[in-house]
Image (tube, rainbow, N blue to C red):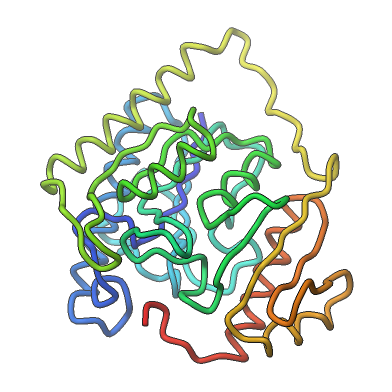
Length: 286
C-alpha cells in the first residue's frame, strides 16, 4: 500500500500566526518542528495500517519547511520549489490513498490563517462554479488521478470545509479557530495521537474493504470531462497579464477563467501563481 502525504503548515498543531509559519518569523523554527511531528504522526499511522511506502511532499510556502533529520525514516521527502504540481508534486495513480496534513480553510473563511494559495492576493476561487480553495482543488485533482483523499488535519473550519466537499474524508481538528490568528489548541500529544489514530483506522478500514486479489489502480479521470477554474485576484494587473496565456478569458477586470482537464488544470494554475508572484510583493497574511 503506497501512501501520499501533502503537508501544509497553517493547519499544524499549535500554530496560529504568520510568525509561526513564515521563514524569518519569531517562531518559525519551532513551527518547522511542529509541522514535522504532525507529519510523523501521519506516517506512523500509515505504517501501522500496512503501508509499504510513504511519500511526503512539503507543500507550504518555500517548500523547505520539514526537517529531514527529524522526519520518520520510512518516509521519502519531496522538498523545494518550483515544482510542476506544487502542493501535489509526486502524486500519481500508483498511490492507494492521499493524506492532507496541516491544511487550512479557503480565502474568506474565518479560519486560522485562511487563504487560497497566495495570501490575500487571491480573493476567491471557483471550480465549475463551486467555491474552492486548497482543500477542494487538491481533492479534485487527486480524484482525477484516481487517488482518494481519505484524511485531513487542520483547524475546525478546514474540517468543515472538507466535510462539505466530501463527507467521506476523515478529519482531525487539532485546533478550534477563535479568529484568523487565534485558536483554542488541542494539547500537542492529544492532537498527534488523534492524527496517528485517524490515519491508521481509516487506512485499515480501506484495506479491509478491498477484496483479493488487489484491484488495479483506478483509471485517472483526466481528459474525460473538462473543468473550469475561475480566480478573482486583488490586482487587475495580474488578471490582465494572465490573459496572454492561450485559453484564459476574463469575466471582469480582476477575474479570469480557463477550462481543461484535471490534473493539467492544477498544473496550469501553478503557472498563474508564479506569474502573480512576479507581479506582486504582498505579504501573505497582512
